[in-house]
Amino acid sequence: MNLSNYYIRGRLFPTILTSIPLLIFLNLIVAKFYHDKLSEIFNILPLITNLGLSTALIFLMVQLNRLIAKEIFQRFYFQDELKMPTTNHLLWKDNFFEQTIKEKIQTKINAKFEIKIQNLTEEQADELKSRKQIVTAVSQIRNALRDNKLLLQHNIEYGFFRNLIGGSLIAMIFSFFIFIYGLSTEQQNFKFIGISLAIVYLIPIILSKPLIRRFGNYYSKILYEQFLSI
Image 1 (spheres, one colour):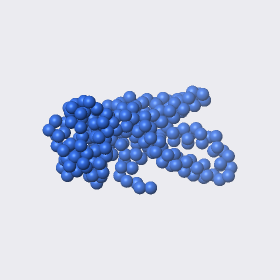
Image 2 (spheres, one colour):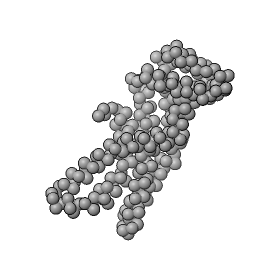
Image 3 (cartoon, helix red, strand yellow):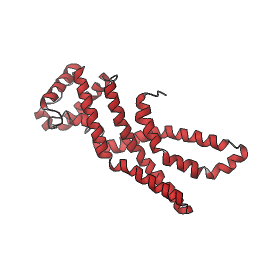
Image 4 (cartoon, rainbow, N blue to C red):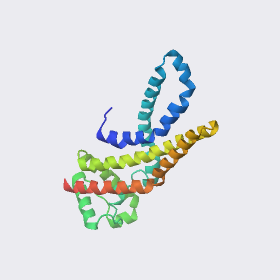
């Protein structure tokens, strides 16, 4: 496994933060059902089992959080990449960049990648085609800036919050499981933990749209600035 800086900070860290309800549910609730039987075999076996399973689940959650973040939140807000800030900001109708800056970016895209993005009249006639052209161009720009440290930092920040939001959805589900368990067994501590965690993880979900857009805008700005500088 390639434990890159992006993987650790952009994917693993948000997964650890959002795995707390899952680990509580696994080690304090589910483990009770098999702890006694395992203890009869060997006293330390339950600990090894819980730690090993917890670690395996965290790495599984890394993949699952990213999938949920991309396929639910990012797809819902941005329609894959067609409406991402990096796409919107190069449309002539968008006001994020000045027209002269967009002209410079598009001229350089054409010169470097031989991709000619539609002019204003063509965009108005077929905006979807313009968006698809920009998506293709952005992919090429990312490849050209693969080793850019400043862009990587902003990519990590965007990835962190995107994956945190995806993980928060799963975390909320397991928080409710903990609450329901506390309710059914009349254990106040589990009820309190469950409802408290559910509220904590609800916050990133409520703020998901402005968070993703904000860090998406930052990333877009740095992407095109760095592209113009090479």
